[in-house]
Image 1 (cartoon, rainbow, N blue to C red):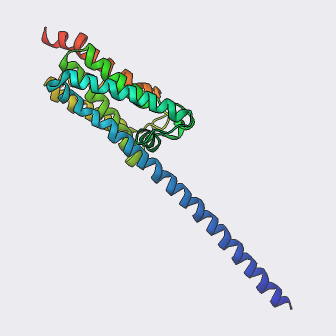
Image 2: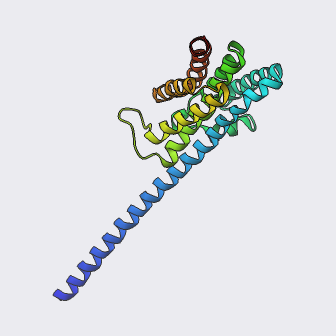
Image 3: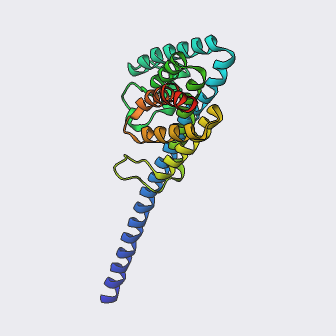
Length: 231
């Protein structure tokens, strides 16, 4: 009788351990799926972001067509997003917005694309061609790659930087340095622009970095660095 009770107790313990293991694997599976979904969203969102790297080339050959196209896309997005926010989905545009939106964007008007388009438009209209290219490429490649690299391979989290990683910041610096050098052909200017751009990217600006990065770096190149290094 005692042996029977011991066997039942062992079976119960084994059952409890199996249940705990199943729960652990289930939770781990949910975490893996959530992380995979976050990475896919970031890849999709930053692919759109990086595509703005073509804007300087378009401005060179089709300036007013590019400006008009950016303005039209901005207006269409604002209208579509306002409708989506009020429960009326617009085919294609609302689907893209939903696919690219982050957790913090849930139940909010998604401002990222607005800031991106406005930042590129202001930079294109206000600054000379070289400086506009510097700002727009820094936004497209520096900010875009910083987020992707940070999400995919980032391990070294920076203190009090809201999830920013050293790997992402390094990718940002290198991308801005290379793109700025390719535009200005000045290692000194590229180094300063990359340093300032990386610092801005570290700031908790959320979607507003899409405005601050291109405008600040274009202004830095046009009004400070170009006069300083060509005097």
